[in-house]
Length: 318
Image (cartoon, rainbow, N blue to C red; front, side):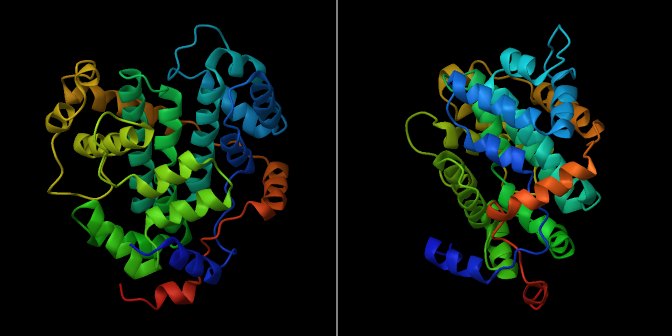
């Protein structure tokens, strides 16, 4: 893997032209890490200032995914009933779906998107069985492959060729990405989360989720790494990996209190994940032209450093 200094050098050679701006409201929501009342109010103000985005939050909050028995009619009510981290996760889910909405027909993007959703659902289950915040786990897992989404959105045809012609371990995929783009998706994730001034925890998750888990219990990054492996074992892998361990083998590696609370039947959790993905994909974004124009103008200081020079990328061997 190249060093941070080397990837920063690569980033300075990349353009800010073709990559669609990630919704500013989601970036700023991720920047709000405190759970104080002030920050909760700030999150509400941020979302409610964007009517189209707020309406999407309410549609998803009222979906069967969250089982709220009363109708949620305002972002204030949503933040109170669902909580800070959950609403932040909703904002990120909507933003990521909107980010790749026009490219979901590209198999690589669709597979990456569904893997991220599956990993988030598994991480949520793992966190609920441990002492970690399940909503924070969902958010962190959802964003763990943002670097891969960026590479695939930036060069969908080239990345789709990589997707169709690559099998094997995550390390194999990372090597292929470096050959084609000069950075792999972990390095790309670090560049994005750093450029967006996100908390260090997101930088660690996006850039180190394939690292070997630390000994002695699971921290948030380790939990998300395990969630990624379990999602693969359940059939939500990005590319086929013949060396992928089975669900039962992975569950046996968990600390006993967590292992005992996870479903014994992989079909149970796989079915739950499939339903969740279907529910989210069935909800179509309702972005207004005014909102898109405002976001594009606001994204100046939050833009991605990952805009590849098309001629540079396509000049590399496929």
